[in-house]
Amino acid sequence: MTSWYSMPTARDWTCPPSPGDAHAFHQSLPGYSPTPLVPVPELATELGVGRLLVKDESSRLGLPAFKVLGASWACRQVLRERPGAMLVTATDGNHGRAVARMAAHFGVAATVFVPEVMLPQTAARITAEGAKVVWVDGGYDDAVRWAAAFAADQPGRALVQDTAWAGYEQVPAWIVQGYQTLLDEIDTQLGGAPDLVTVPVGVGSLAEAVVRHCRRPAAAHPGVLSVEPDTAACVLASLTAARPRYGQFCAPAATRPSPSATRTHCAPWPTSAGSASPRA
Ligand SMILES: Cc1ncc(COP(=O)(O)O)c(C=O)c1O
Image (tube, rainbow, N blue to C red):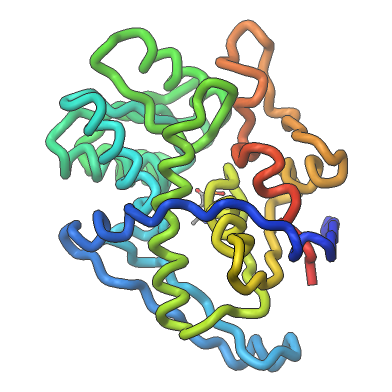
């Protein structure tokens, strides 16, 4: 089922941009190069638009997704504050593999909590990065709760999670900052602003980075179209309710770190709310 939400006034809304320090750090990493911006003329014709370009993140710093841009910057920032800490996280795949890769890069240990639905081959790729993988009896949110509790249990452990909740906002903010590199690359490759940016939503970090970039003051404000699965549509639910909505993914209160640790809602309200639409 497809549901739409449109907010034409969103383009006038502004918010502070993400600080851009991460780009220089990414350029210092082995194997860094901008990923391609690939034209897809057939789809442009089908949709009746002038030009359609895809930012191809299938090979980013040697990994198959953009998540390493956020994870690498956050790991760097965390280890600056807590040198030698074991990095701890929960994942559905890409984020955890990126944290494991960065732990090996910085020479520290990593423990990655994964939901029971994860494919064994996905977990094996995280193990192959040198991390310890812990399977959780439950879903993604349970894995996040276990990772947070495990990290809090000993001083030498640091949680690097892309999901945010009250009291845990700095690390998710660093992850959003890491994605600024991708947006800087697009600006350089495109030589100007697009008319519309479409962004997929999981925990919402990439969408927040896109909104911060496309709603920064004194810059072009292209349309932003966010797309999320109808099985985890917290952004749509939040926009429709005009307040943060936390998905049915919340487990019993006793076991969750905080009410806001839900699968798909991490952008602090109203950072993304005023601008995720207009949707076409
Ligand atoms: C390939 C891919 N695309 C999109 C997303 C969604 O990104 P975010 O979780 O920052 O919303 C993810 C999240 O894991 C991903 O792995």
